[in-house]
Length: 417
Ligand SMILES: C[S@@+](CC[C@H](N)C(=O)[O-])C[C@H]1O[C@@H](n2cnc3c(N)ncnc32)[C@H](O)[C@@H]1O
Image 1: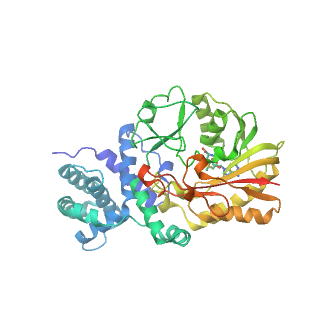
Image 2: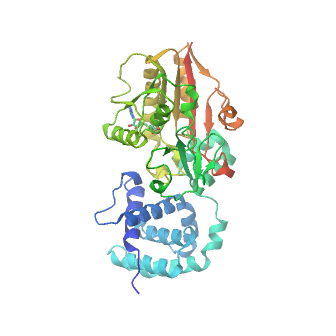
Image 3: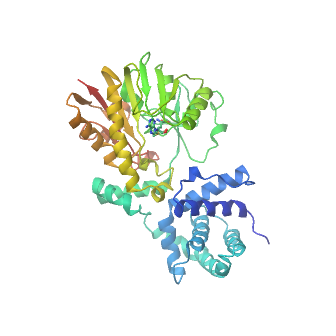
C-alpha cells in the first residue's frame, strides 16, 4: 500500500534542514509551490514537534543505531520518532512513510532498510525510553548564560516548559469575552493550543488579537494612557499598538521595517483601531516630546521558545551582543523623546539578563536623573515573585506552570526626575 501524507513530511524535512543546517527561522521559510495550505500547516507542526524535542528524540534513537547517521537520515528518523512518540501516530503508517521518503532520495535510499528497522523498534519499545528521558537541553550558547542567571533548578524548569509548548492567548478590547476561554488573573483570555484562530468568535469583528499574557503587561506599566500622546517605538506587528489604541491613547507607531509596518496597518484595519504609522529608524527619529513611550526593543526573543522551538538553533551569542548594543542606544533615543515626567517602559521578550535587568542598571548609570518606577506585580494580577531587585519584572516560561505557562519577558518602567 502506498504511504500517504508524504508531501507534508517531505516539506517538514526541508524545514528541519533549513533550520538545523542553514540556520533559518521557520517563519522565514516559504513552503514550496504546490503544497496545499493544510500540508504546509502539517509540515510546520511536524517540524516544530521535532525541534521542540530533538534532544530527547536523539536519546531514544541512539541505542538503535550503530553509528551516528548523516543529518538527512537522522532527520527522517527524528521525524518518524516524533510522529510515534509525540503525535501518537499509527506505527504502520509512520514507518511506511519514513521508508518511502528515504527511498525517494538518492542520498538516503541506501539507509531505507535501517530506517525501517529502527522505527519499528521505536514503535515497539520507544515509549518507555521516551518517558524516562529528561527534557531537551538548550544549546550551550544559550544554556550557559541562563544557568549563570537562574541556576540548575530553574533552568531545568524552563527547559521543561519549552517542551510543553504554549496555549493560545488573546488580548481583547475592553469588555469582550469568549465563553469557552479561561480568563487569566492579568486579564488575558486563554484557550488550548491548536485552535483555528480565524474561526474564533470576535475575529471578524476585530475584538481581540493574539498576544501572550506576558506581552500584554508592558503597556499596563504606562498607567492611564487615555488621551495621551504615546510613542510605540518598535511597533510591528502591532500587538502593543492595538492595546494602546484600544485604551484611548493617541499612538504613533514607529518601526524601521516598512514591510512589518504593513502588518501593523492590516492589524489596525481588522480591529478598527487607529494609530499614526511612521517608517523610520528609532535612533534618528525626531518629534515633539511624547507623554509616554513604549520601547519593545528588538531582542533575541529567547522568552518565546515555547512558540518558536527553532530559535535556539538559529540565534547566536554574536547576534545577542549586537542586539544589546542596539537596545542601549534605543533607550537613550527614547529618553530624548520623552516629555518631562513622562514614563518610558522598556521591555524585551528575552530570558537573558543582558537584554533586561542589565540594560536598566546600565541606563541608570548613564543618566543620573533617571529612576525606576517600582512595580507591584500583584496589582497587575501577577505573582509577587516576578518582581526583580532593580524594580522591573522578570517573567519566565516556568512561571504559572499550572495555568499553562507564560512567555519569558523583562519589563521596567523608567522616569526622568
Ligand atoms: C520585538 S519587535 C516589536 C513587537 C511589537 N512591539 C508588538 O508588540 O507587536 C521589535 C521591532 O523593532 C523593529 N526595529 C528594529 N530595529 C529598529 C530601529 N532601529 N528602529 C525602529 N524599529 C526597529 C523591528 O522591525 C521589529 O518590528
